[in-house]
Amino acid sequence: MRFRPLPASALAVAVATALLVGGCGSDDDWSRPHAKPTAVGAIGPGFSDPAAPPAPEATITPSPGSWDGVRPSAGYRVVLLTAGQDPQTRTLVSAVTEWAEEEDVSLKTVTATKPDQFIPSIVRAMDLAPDLIISAGDDLIDPLALVTPNHLDRRFLVIGAELAEPTQNVTAADWTGASFRGEGLGMSSAYDPATFTAERAGRAVRAGVAAVLTGLTGIVIWLD
Image (cartoon, rainbow, N blue to C red; front, side, top):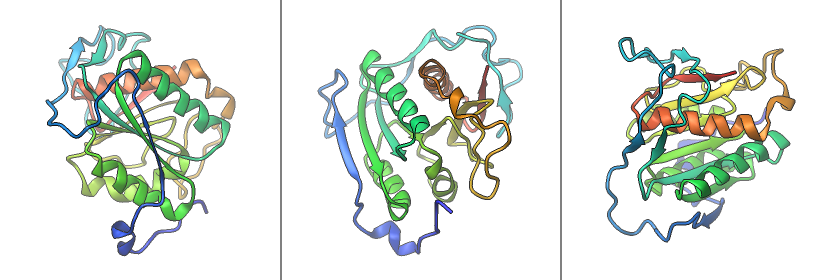
């Protein structure tokens, strides 16, 4: 088992995570008041049906590139929450950092290296009060399933995996080959580490962020 449930007191302990602060083209230290972010641009045709918005926990398969016209407004604050050093997770982390640099996003990274750090790392990420928390790494799926339903005011994007029963604040972007949904469900026979390419991970980040920025949350975005 990768994750062992922790007592409630774990939420109050000091977080033994590595917090890396990257400018990504922004001088924002997050100490000043912050305007609510908005979407710059618009979702293109084929992302979803405006006349029939997806229901909670629904899966949509947007047309390739239909998210390309959307980017975050200036000063968008994102925490990259990550655990694991496997090649798949490293690919996802690289995709997030490259996207943040290209879009001038203010990015901070919280990294958990041990199982007893998983829940505290999520708490630390929330305490930073970002506009969005992007999760990369299968080890965080079960901890997120425990924490996110109790913090509906925080927005999460899971890339390369998904929660089995996401609440309205958790959006996922994955694909055939990236099918992890938690320890109890395991990995399907379709799981394939080779599908975690830089190109596909980059599309997952951009499509997922576009969905969050335009209010399509609590769903799974399925990529080809």
